[in-house]
Length: 81
Image (cartoon, rainbow, N blue to C red; front, side):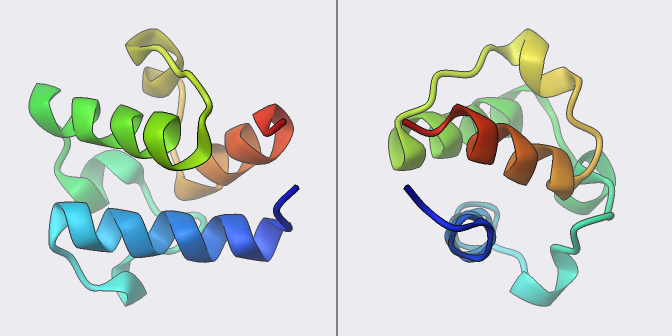
């Protein structure tokens, strides 16, 4: 089971890589939509990161409830095996 800090570090590394942004722009309280400029394709990329990297299924409907990066970290932390 990963610690919260490990979840944050791994998630931020992958998001920075996939979305080609600087890690320092990924702040816990930052808006996901604004930071990543989400569209339908990038939404699929974000779902893939959670599903493939953490082996946690997430639906597009669930993901639209996520407003900040903390929401992603919380979801991963509470759903990890």
